Length: 227
Ligand code: APR
Image (cartoon, rainbow, N blue to C red):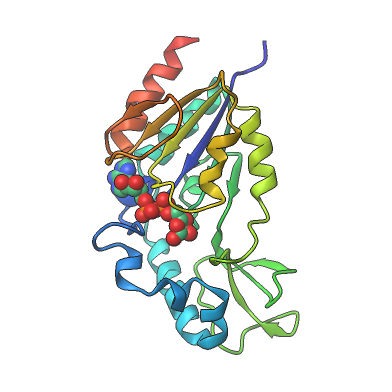
């Protein structure tokens, strides 16, 4: 019998217990940086060094940051289910935890591209500096900035439409088109949301009001024992 399909949408909240700041909490990234300066194409054209330094700092921090139980327990689901992780996070913690099918909607810190995002190179946790070149243009972070296209969105929708169970972990669902993935979930599919705060969702869903590591443990224990 085919494995049931689980699709998991994650946001910054799943990496909070690894020590990475979320975006919209009191001392979040957007509380300490102006989005327009570091996460828009206009900001990039205005001050490339400021943008490079912002992502260099986050990349250096990621080097000494590790997957937490939430990332790791999701991998266990792959023993019984066909699992796809769709993440808004640009960290590599799902990869390092061992998830095998991951779609990054907003790019990846460990990659760099040319100015036009035609070629993508792995750079690990290395800095990108003014003067670094790819295809004879200034290298830039492989990040989807506000206002830029989200090339992985079609792949994500295709996965979500096939989900029997759709799990949302640690995202405020504030940002589109990522948040619109909920609209592509089959009516008969089960939706489960894990968050420390209440998040508005316009369809029936099961809410696990816990931090990610505890909520994922509770959910994985249940899912590994029902079918
Ligand atoms: N456990 C579970 N949930 C948590 C935890 C935790 N330990 N800590 C925070 N959360 C929840 C918050 O309650 C919130 O709902 O995680 C969510 C984080 O929301 P945001 O900070 O808005 O992050 P996210 O939803 O991932 O942002 C989406 O916005 O700025 C862009 O590109 C950026 O990918 C990001 C996108």
